[in-house]
Image (tube, rainbow over all chains, first blue to last red):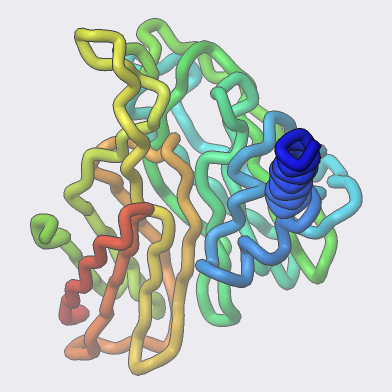
Length: 157
Length: 103
């Protein structure tokens, strides 16, 4: 009698811990953000909409005031250079997403006042994909896309 | 401790253009070794650049940033002789800080 009762208790206890872990992982991305200054939830997203949500926005509008400079065809997906610039006033954040990578968000930059909304970096691309430049300006999100063809993927072993 | 960063900071018109080359594996966590064991992710998560105590750029990176990351940006308010300090932190908690003088 006693042992089975204990087992039941153990069982439910374990379930509760699991439930907490799920809740912490899925429904409280804000806490992870506050802890280490790295938006874990945003870096786990698979699409533009999810990334925008994980960054605290609603939806993003397409904008012609964002520019992506990159090669149209990348021979080596392990190193694809990108320059992103924004002409949107009050640009405060610039992010780069690779739609078909395992996780979409590659890098995000906070642009304080006095810093030009212009960044240049290099990212990996697993395959030919749309690149999305996401810009947060005055609390709103804007984006533009560009397709980059990859002849040799950057995520293989 | 990781290898030092290569930092160049130079005036470009009235702005300072900073170029940084970091030395880091940037392992994605997606790859497997020859025995099929996944190689754990190891990548720079945070980068901060300061000038005269003011943050001029901060970045959050995922493992999709290329190995030995390159970063370039421009800010205003700097002059030759000033220092630009760059710090990165990776997902294992390793840190590296280097500085350059604006030329």
